[in-house]
Image (cartoon, rainbow, N blue to C red; front, side, top):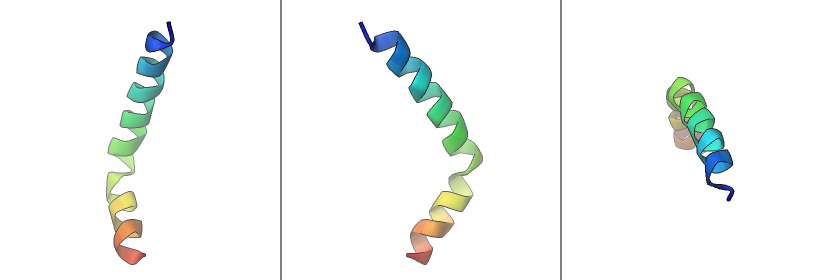
Length: 31
């Protein structure tokens, strides 16, 4: 199944999101 792959992708995306959360929120509010 794709579950292990999805889990790996999700965890890396979450790590990136935690690092860039402030920047993402800032660009959301800019738009």
